[in-house]
Length: 363
Image 1: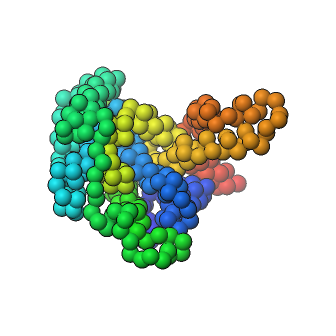
Image 2: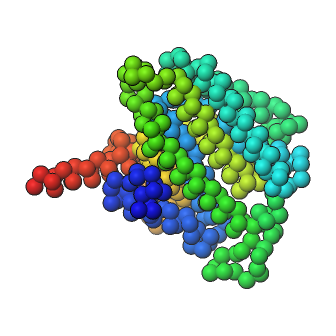
Image 3: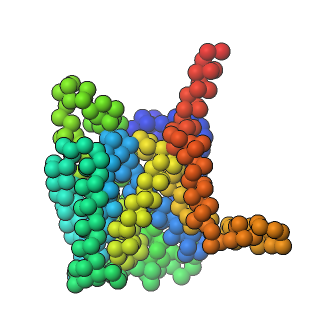
């Protein structure tokens, strides 16, 4: 079947997971028509970027068993590559291409160097090395103001067809404005889908099976003749390249990049949370986890305000659900998700589906 080929024969493994994936993809595909307002469309675009970013990190953590804190560095390199190229050169597709190529080359070389020199040490030491490298890169980006704009970042122009002022038609089509934002959104959407399917193919290839074997028992994989350092290094490079492309898409959407936008350690924490929520070692976990987490992050405060207003006059409840306490409730939701879904949402639902299938077979 065509679907099996697109998904590299990696089916969701659960009807509930399938329904969730179809619903999320459908909403994201039709977001310009279904979601009125700039905020809703921006949230949808951010979800797409994070799907790609989190999936690339899951390739590293969930499939290879490598803990790295330098993933946002590659994310930032992609964003800065486009921002600097479009600032120094004319805002053309050629400038965007130059920025992407330079960012990919730099990310690939850095990931290769980090992999070759660091992946021979134990996991905790590798994690600390990547944390130090990421911190140094963020400091450099903040201080090289002539190149990166420093703490203020870079606002830049994009090719005309991606500019909000560009318009195909004065009349809306099915409620959607046919302007540059419309084009940019679908550029982000199509790019995310294609790159996600490429990653899905990688993890389901013989190369991906070796990565999973290394994750489970690297000594046994080494004894079978696989050069585990080589495979880990390649996994590190591939994850970096996909993270770089996620940064490129974010920069094109925002037409801006700064240290807090793509290099912040808070983004790294968000990536870790989403991987845990969605499920490590499951590419589909990146889709479901990103959608749930970013929706909660973007709209939990608004929902709490509605609850606070609705319970006005009652004791404690209005204060408990005050919008200023949204981070507290976001933390509670995370703790509950980890408690009830220790293997992540996708992992738990797949396990439940497998148990039901075994029970049906036994009966």
